[in-house]
Image 1 (tube, one colour):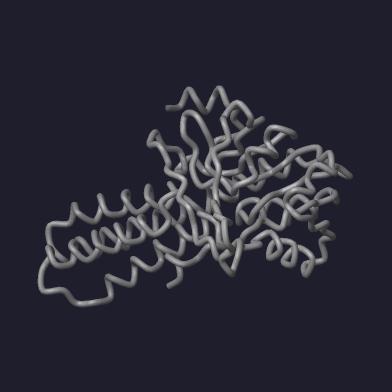
Image 2 (tube, helix red, strand yellow; image 1 turned 60 degrees about the vertical axis):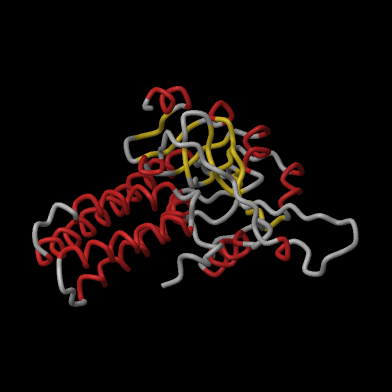
Length: 271
């Protein structure tokens, strides 16, 4: 299971991976209900802490843990865990399908759209929309880990033409819309790949994400390994390496959710 050190996959992929991993815990023997719950709590905490900005991961793990704790015996707790995971995975699957359909409706034939980072939800929208109406796709390489390159390669290998650019070259283009995912949505801002704030300040920007990424908690943007930006240290050079930034909700044109496309004002009203 690769979650803690995965800096390339989006929140939806890692959330599904974490839930699938938790299910494996039910295959082991435990001397008591308390021992089983202790292990589940420990794993939920570890996974949540490994990707602190990914609200859907924390929310889904909390939901599953709460249902697991209702089991009065170790066998009932195991059953609750498996049933809750199955329920949440089904929710995620259905939510993504609905979001894909809604996102597709926004992309018009021969339009130009730009995406940043590698959201699995956005990727599915692009695949689906291109089969309906061909359009131009611009993908930012998404430094420092270049997950945008992976998205471009995946699309290209599937027969979809892509223009891959360095992040700062976005200003050379005038896309009809920017489509991104999100790690978190708060009443004030969206947490997504660093550079999203700049794009949303320049172009019509839509965020594709399910509402399990909504939170009232403030998100801390952590500094990451400076060697990802500059491998060898240099005298008087101090590296700041951030994966995410905070884009004010007012910068966002719309949110593509499992309940429809919401304006920023509508999203604010939900908290």
